[in-house]
Length: 199
Image (tube, rainbow, N blue to C red; front, side, top):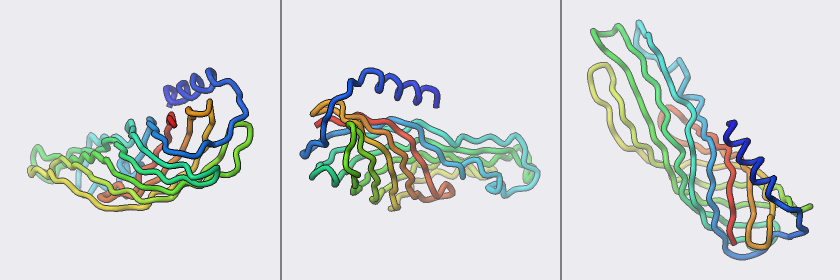
């Protein structure tokens, strides 16, 4: 999070205030941030007796490119790819000698969203988004002495909100929070990111 905050500070430091409006047309964007899946560290996932040495990872780096079309100051459509990161947990159990339970899920997805903007003011415009996320997960792990590797996929709701700052007529920055439904035990992944928009 410190790196994320520093990146935001650097971007804002090099921006000079200009009275710009949101420009209609096609655009590309690259977002980078941090994703979080609190369910990955939920100890209720422990289903075998005598658990010890529990460990988990519920945060990861997220990134993804998107393309979109800005119709006017209030409406845009956007589609793209996102890599949400890898989340995992593991623990030892006395259910059998030398037994462990471990699970790792790496998520990516294709998404499509509708973005609605409030009227811009001083180069800033607040926005909200709603869409769908076609996710894929690569799952690896083991249950006691058995390997448990498989791939899963499905669809889920995507919701988000944020702010866009117009740097100049063909360059903007955005800061956003997104929440997306996924499958498996994680159920939901939240992402906080910064992006550069090229038009």
